[in-house]
Each structure stands twice: as C-alpha cells, then as structure tokens.
Image (tube, rainbow, N blue to C red; front, side):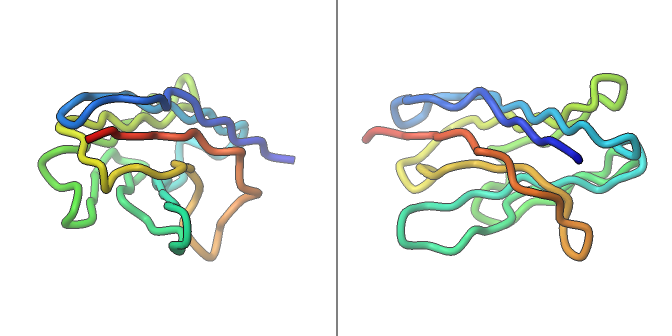
Length: 115
C-alpha cells in the first residue's frame, strides 16, 4: 500500500512563505506525475500545481509566479515552495497523482495565512 505524507504547513502572515513537502512511498515515484492540491472549508479540492516525471511544472493561474513545484526522485519527495502568500491560500494542502492514477489521500498539511 502506498503512503503519502505531507508536511510543512503552518500559520504565516500575508506575504510570507512556506515550503511544503510530500513523501510518497511508491516504487514508481520517478515515473509518475504528481500534483499539489488544496481544499478550503466549504470548497472542493482543487489542483494547484503539478510536475511531470521529467520535472516540467504546471500551475493554476491563481498561484502562477508565487508557487514553485519541484521534486527529488531519490527522496521520493515533491515540494511546493509558496511565496507571497495570501489569505485566500488558506487551505489543507495534499499531494497525489492526478486521475485516473490517484492514490489513497494522505492527511494533508494545514496552511493558514493571516491578513
């Protein structure tokens, strides 16, 4: 069974930065696309960034220029560097493989941005 563990969240002020980490215990990690998702209270979970096995990133418009996704295949880890944080970035952040290869969800990591 694959386990996903996210970490790095916290409480920051508007304009602050956080770096999230996601370790996924899948033997095929280096060949998989992974994404960072977030879910705010009352909202659906949304994909905010993804990265291919070759390291090519993609971002939703609302985070372009502020978030950077990266990966370390040797550590089976995906990172999300979040800069210039805004209150609307407040959510629980998760990482996973996009459909149809979605794995069991981890517990996520809470990011709270105060105004």
